[in-house]
Image (cartoon, rainbow, N blue to C red; front, top):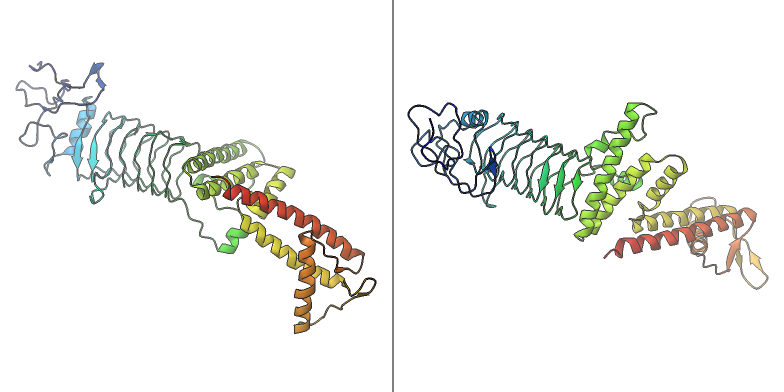
Length: 431
């Protein structure tokens, strides 16, 4: 039976079409869109008004009755191919909702639990899955939800819970994810671009391989995986991987076969994502965070290298964290000075007392005040002068092995001084 009002969008055969027409929803769509090839803007919803009295259907009420079967109506409307848009659902438990490929743009789910829901491949543009005001406690729960290949462009996911959500190949353009909890979220192949905001979002243990992140994305205050190792391990060892993808890999690739190809594909995907995040931080002036992700990018390159190239990457990491840590260079240089000072003391030094007279002081064997004084005032002094290539000439080596040690120390000192200047210019000259 045809409806008397021609501007209804949802006028499809199904359970609600009977001999006695039910009142139809008068909600007018205000966005551009199409349903069955017909534009919907300016037309009324037309979904049957049930579960209460009023001019709006169960999806467009300001306050839905507590006993209204929202889950059943959503799944039924999906099977009837009804046009579900601009929904207003509040404080509902819709865990495990089966709604594959939904078309629900510009909808609001305030305080709704969609844990484990199946929304894959759907049009979720402009949806609000969070809160409208900061003091509102109604947070949308999308934990373990299936959102792969969905379009969440221009959606609001403020403070939404997306723990363990499956968001592979999801489009997040101009999406607001401020303070969203996305722990262990799978974002492999997702697209985060435009003016998307992830400020203070929690991305601990997220899977981000091959995730495309635009330069305008706001990553200020994002919580990545924290390195919980002791400080001396963090200084001496390699950087702890941020992404779970990289952390689950072995340090060396398999020798042959498909596992080897998968290993290189994963590590190269992590490298590209690190580079994109680094550029985001650079463009927003957050150079400290940009430096950290540059180190992780270089670590991925090191793992893909072999032979001398891998050794060169390792040396740059150990000495300066890929030119990002001038403090580390200074600490290593001071350690070298002390080591060479001990070596010079063991090999013997000559102290020039006059134009042609030299006295060779003896190295005290036992620990004593005289030995400490000799080590500090003579050995460390001579090592520092040699390391900085200053060379006063008042003290010199007593034998050939000592002169060889001086040559090695002078060359090492020149290299470390140049390395320190490069790190200093790179770290504080970016702006």
